[in-house]
Image (cartoon, rainbow, N blue to C red; front, top):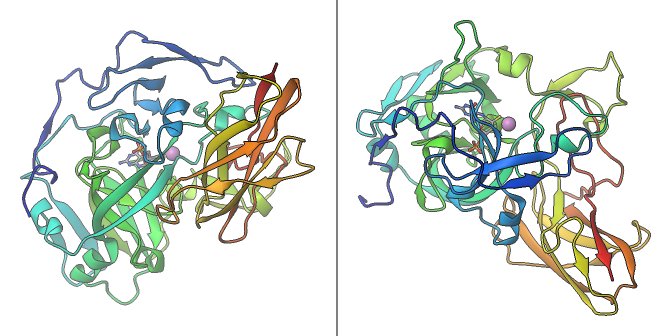
Length: 401
Ligand SMILES: Nc1nc2c(c(=O)[nH]1)N[C@H]1C(S)=C(S)[C@@H](COP(=O)(O)O)O[C@H]1N2
Ligand SMILES: [Mo]
């Protein structure tokens, strides 16, 4: 059971490790419509390769889009990073680490990593996507981190069922929700500690995981070493990193991060007209299907009169990818792409097609995913003031010459 794959090794980074003062390596243009569009990249963050620096403190590191064209799993050192508060531990003593389970339970627990890793394991692939992924493309522009499409990543996760841990603690009758907190702390004294919760039934569905391996390796510190919550099919705001505390609640959670932040309009598709007021809101939850071309960057040039091979990645959101169709005529006609290997319903899935030789001129490649739940990406833009749940068909414009 022991071995280099288990997170027994402590993580100890230098005091300046998370200061993010590195010089820019490269400038990338995210083609954001409403504001400054260029971002520096850096490889200076611990355990990270070249990442787009959206913000240095707390670190918001975006995965450069070309990484998604290289494989359906995002390497750990290119996996995106997002933290709310700057006070993130730079050293974690794996031997002393404990996961506490408390609240409305028969037996409060204080579990060591060894105890957790001795429990039955599960493993599956799942896309971790920030609620605000692609926010920078919202028109009109909205407040918040101006992410391109790289606030998402896919990994194979290994860990234990949250249900098994809850059963070990013995959830008492009258419990309704399960709340998670991690080791990071607010930088300001009255800042609300980052906490998220799930309804008890969801927490006990046997899929929600406490993960200790990401693509077969201990989690990078910035992705939550030594433990994080995986809520497959749901946006990553619930995927608590550096998980240290699980509290079983007898009333719905009204903490700031549930009651005030991360809420979407309770309207079809979470869509509202810019400036609309007076609609009800609800916590963001399930993801929706999305797809992107990865074989061609926006503005790429291709040769006229030759068959055009196109590749991309798709996700089903809270279900698998049923099909991906491609259009080059603005959505009047669609042709099915062939799908790559099925890595599980919560994973990215590759698609590819060879399009008939295009004529010279500007061409818009439109990929459109339909999930196994029967949801198809919309052609119309989605808009809400939080910049959440973008899911419309994303065009890639190329030049045929
Ligand atoms: N402890 C902790 N967990 C957290 C957060 C946080 O600020 N602190 N942010 C959440 C949000 S909003 C996102 S998008 C994901 C980002 O996960 P990643 O950094 O591994 O990509 O972590 C989630 N879990
Ligand atoms: Mo997020």
